[in-house]
Length: 255
Image 1 (cartoon, rainbow, N blue to C red):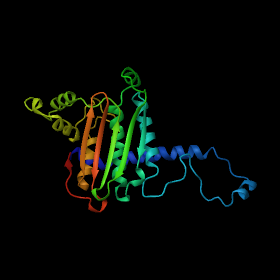
Image 2 (image 1 turned 30 degrees about the horizontal axis):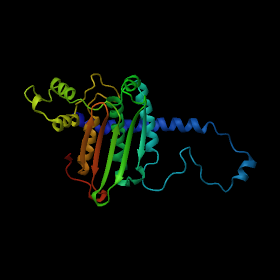
Image 3 (image 1 turned 180 degrees about the horizontal axis):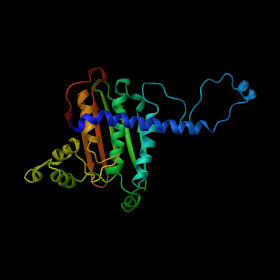
Image 4 (image 1 turned 90 degrees about the vertical axis):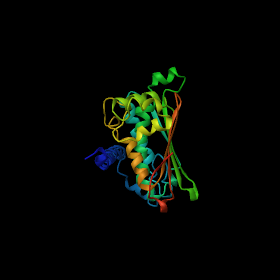
């Protein structure tokens, strides 16, 4: 068996933990409400919808709870790594129902990667002239007949090519002869290899070498494209190009 054989289990476990956290928060909120009196029941007898803090649920196929789930995930991961981070979600109401699960799984892994690998500590960010709280921005766009584009960008430290090569050499992904000849695209492609991670000690959020590989595998299933852009000290952007929902399938193309 290989690491890929355990990917479904990792995803399901993460979903379970996310749902448990959501249920816990819901119970906490409900406990603050008191049972309505007869007078209040009469006054609001015609009211059939309860609006949350975020307002009424927007129409469409999107998972209305996904932005909140990602924000909770970001807060937890950032806290456990002594960082500050927030999540911005744009265009999630454009996600077709066929892609809800795959976008959710990719978003969860991408947010984890952005905070663990990209976002710096508050002190480091202040020293670089940045705001202490890092930002992970997720945008989903409907491109019409061209399909969809899903991007995840953080304003962190960017990717270090030499560091990736160093780790790849240590772990046997490349040889000493290959390392000097790898260009940026070839080096970044190592991040999507099963078992590759620049984190020395594995945690529940990083270091197992399954996050980026899982994203590549999900894109492979629908015949999508994966692109990566970065600038040292400024940002890292992961872009997934998804085919029209009715044409999903085939081979993944690396961009």
